Image 1 (spheres, rainbow, N blue to C red):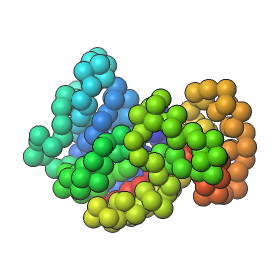
Image 2 (cartoon, rainbow, N blue to C red; image 1 turned 30 degrees about the horizontal axis):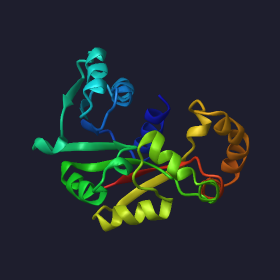
Image 3 (cartoon, one colour; image 1 turned 180 degrees about the horizontal axis):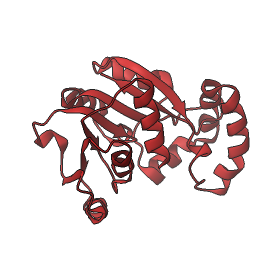
Length: 206
């Protein structure tokens, strides 16, 4: 729910009403299901390679969404908008992956965890992200935007998101960090992301 609201905010402030939306690595399908309620005239496709996640997708049984097991690159379809939400940091050849995605839609929405911060370097928490959620690559906002530019994307819009302000904390340490992170984020999202971390960046590109 929280991520779909951020995506809708990004689309609305850029006056985009896509007719076809594809999500790469849709997981259990929650994001596209929420978006389908907000965009009832759009057609959605969700790609997922995990059999366990695909079973959860298909259990949703939403006529507006076509859940597909496998790889988006196996299809020749092109969409109005493609969602890549917390995905490419898991992909070994992430730049090759991003270059191939460019041709799959006019507009692309990326949600990118910003694992690199002053606090994460001091506490070596990037290694925990590697072991707990499988991140292979780590970004700041600037390196994430530079990566997209290097892969041929033009960034149209973007903003910091604060998962600690809308999602449950995963550990007692995350709960302890929530209050200072929220306070600093309210004053300056960029400073909060750089110093305390726990933020992501949502990007609209073409």
